[in-house]
Image (tube, rainbow, N blue to C red; front, side, top):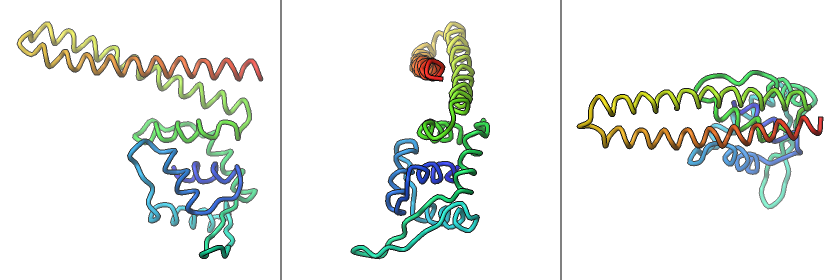
Amino acid sequence: MYDLLLLGSLVGGDKTGYKLQKIVGSALQPMRKVSSGVLYPSLEKLEKEGLITSTEQQDVRKTKLWHITAAGTARFAELMQNDIPSDAKRNDMIHFKLRSLNSVSMPVQLKILTEFQLFIESDLLFYQQAQRDMLVHREEYPDQAPRFDVIVSAYDLDIQLAQTKLSWIKQQIEQRKTLG
């Protein structure tokens, strides 16, 4: 997962480990931090694979500047074209890819946006069905109505968020088709 984000960050230019840590941290969901114990082993792995290189610089203190290689650029393009997995990391992968859309071709951008759209449409159907189920349970168990009301309200939020995401995605797709 970090390969995509690190390579995508370096496509835009060389960066220090500190800067990469800030970029990766800002790309993750709020409240998730990237430790040096995760970041630097990931960078070293990419370097061993020949996807990035590093040069030491002496400023106030010694730092490494990371640079993407041609092989790294090719790997980044490949990762951007890969399907987004339907697992717990799905949202992070979508966010990573959205942040790097301008680094890939228009057909790849449209593929990513369409895939995101399909996930959100599926989520929306799930939330709507779950909300209907809770309304049925509310009728079956009137003594627990306040509990079901809270759950129905939470599904309202999920539905509204999914609808907002779908509106944004459709706008992005239309803009790209107009430019395309």
